[in-house]
Amino acid sequence: MKKQKPWIYAAGVLALTGLMMLTGCGGNGGKKEPVTLTVWHVYGGQTDSPLNDLIEEFNETIGVKEGIKLQVTVVSNTNNIHDAVLRAANHEPGTTGLPDMFISYPKTVLAMPDSDILVDYRGYFSEEELSDYIPAFLKEGEIDGRLVVFPVAKSTEIMFIDKTLFDRFAADTGATLDQLDTWEGLFELSKAYYQWTDARTPEVPRDGKAFFVHDYHFNYFQVGVESLGEDFFQGNKIAYGNAFSKVWEPYADAAVQGGIWLQKGYATEPLRTGESVVSVASSASVLYYEDIVTYSDNTSEPIEVIARPVPCFENGERLVMQRGAGFCTVKSTPERERAAAVFLKWLTEPEMNVRFVTSVGYMPVTEAAFKILPEVAETLEDPKYRSLYEAFLKTQSSYQFYTAPQLDNYLELEQAFEKNVRSKLRTAYSRWQDEEDVEKLKFEALENVKAYR
View 1 (cartoon, rainbow, N blue to C red):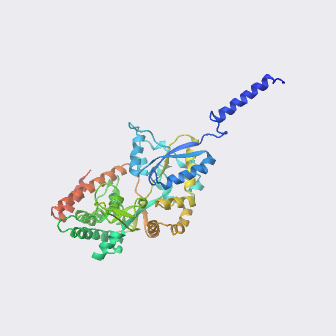
View 2: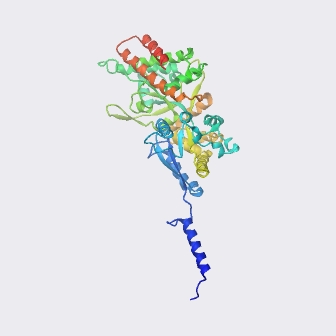
View 3: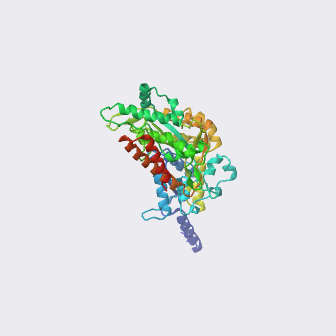
């Protein structure tokens, strides 16, 4: 056999060594390991999430082509993710650090010790690309001139009704759904419902049930005051003006007399257990409203849940809160940051975005997606979702969207107000059960709320 020349042998060794370095010890056919990004989000549950399904689809298609893999490590609610983000950002003991991408409201970013750790998406989206998005949705995600919260789905507040229970109440009392068009009408029904349920057990005095639950009392007051033509905020404080008193009056009147749910937790829970009939919550709450109610005695029955636009005041503007968080991306390397932008562009393509938002009860974020939304909404199989999108479209056509101001202490004000108002009115309701005067209790509760600092 003819001997190989030494230089040929050496070249072969070098070539083989280089190939091994490229492929790695496992020999993966020359493919680079994908860029893997961790994700925290709020769309569904850990084992039943529409976004998880879409992320899996992305990983198997565009992700394979682009060398990107998204790994969902947390699915929770916005409050839990807010707390986890702030703990991680403040390097509190026991935290594992921030993920590559997380869902956030602007208020979370404003509460972070340093928002500069987040990517400015203008570095990865051209002005032409950004022009496709609803300007107000992009504007909400700007912090100090940087686009750090990117919209993928937006929501608003919607009224959800257990129509099965409402119809029983209506059959006995003559109540109508049209009375829910105004806050004044809703709160009158709230008092009537408490009295109606109380009368069903005459042997137990004042054991009626609440009719109405609001996910965010702070939003009710903020939007209500603004709809009556006054500013809710004065600088970085709440302005307790004449409009606030007008918004307080029917609300407190119903709350003191048992018509409003004032406990902790989300508005979905009392509807799912029959402890209330009507809720105002984020449109995305549709994910958690079930077609069955389970009462405190463990009996259950199927129910029909319908959606309507939120009430407004008789003399007020039709105003509704704009809601919906967006994705933040933590700064790392250009390659990883680009990977996050690739996913966001894919998720907000018109057809994909409408497919996503109609599975979770949100609005799309681009002009093109809005154009195809009505047609797609008509094809939804679940009547609860069809009802939601009918309410959505009515809201879009007849209401103005309100965006909360970006105050450094907004979250602090919101949390303190929520806790304080619920607490003061729970106390007033308890005293009313002991037959104290309603007007006195409403006045004292309002003064206590104003005095709280």
